[in-house]
Length: 485
Image 1 (tube, rainbow, N blue to C red):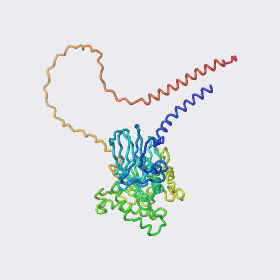
Image 2: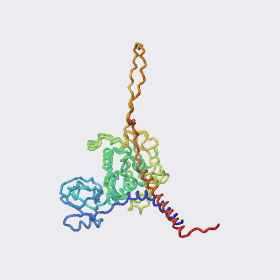
Image 3: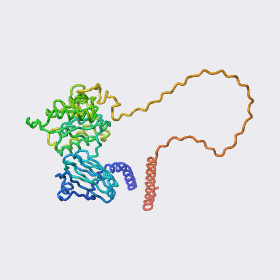
Image 4: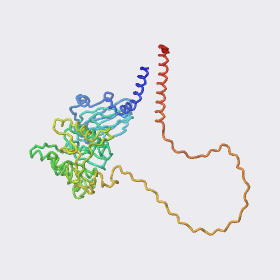
């Protein structure tokens, strides 16, 4: 009987583990299919080594150069993943069928990494350099599943945002603004992204995207590419970072992405960093300038004017807002915003040698304390309070309720009293042959999942029962019970 109980427990554990196993299968890492493809990088044998194997030194293609990849059989959900030393300009990818017919040509958006889905009918692809050439750090072909860092399947940033974070450096978005994306973006579903003002290092760009993805950001962040200058640099070095350029860039971002709410850093630069101060100052000054048609006529002509509804600054002391950093977030399996931000900061591996850490509530530079510095609507108690809901990205126009039309009541006309009619003789109805009343039936729900669960449960119980019966019978035949009366 002990073995039977053990068998039953094992079966129950297996049944309980099935949902977990299915979820695990859905989030498996993407398989590396690179070796199944043939790459042609031209006559230089060093190109393949750098791009496919070394992955540390980039390879430069001139404007008239390209590389190709070919494959023999259909591939499903495969993706060509390219990491660039510098974001590509006017680089195109054309996919061809086996007979050489061009199926699709697309110009890549200039980002640090590109993920290009391969068509099922395609058998080759050509990556063509733009007029300025291209610098390829490495590339791979990956199958379905979760992409490895630094690749992420970003959604392209729309031209209307609910919120926007302006981060001076990669990791400032986590250390000082890191409660916003997990809480309002990932958990509550508001649409937003992050602007990184300075980032000229390829490694820091990877860390920025990895950290943003860990916080739940799914709309591709934007890199302005301005010069990162150390806090202790001399005057000539700091002159490479011009406030006038930063201000114009900020106004253009407001006009292009149309954010309703903007979050930026501390006017005092948190720990006093001069670039933090200028970023916060520009974010505040651009609040009104983006709505002024006379400022930067070029961007006004291209995008039009835009009025941001609210501007929150880190640690600002008026109209204070403290984001709940302790609430469990279902998007992150119950972890809170603080745990998520701490994990995101660990993605910034080059910064771990410094003393910085994510702090919350009353801690110094707490990542969840803000104040509304500018606004055209009242602050309220939450981020989107006071903003017309029709401006939000998830707004759904309600279905209007039809108003019944009043029918005028007519005066009854005088009618003569009818003469009495003789009562008709009763009529016997003719017999009917299996006449069935047609009554509309409500739409039935799809009960197939429950049916399968029931079948599996009954089958399992039957197997266990039959196994137990024959096992017991066998044991009794081997060892009949003693008669102790």
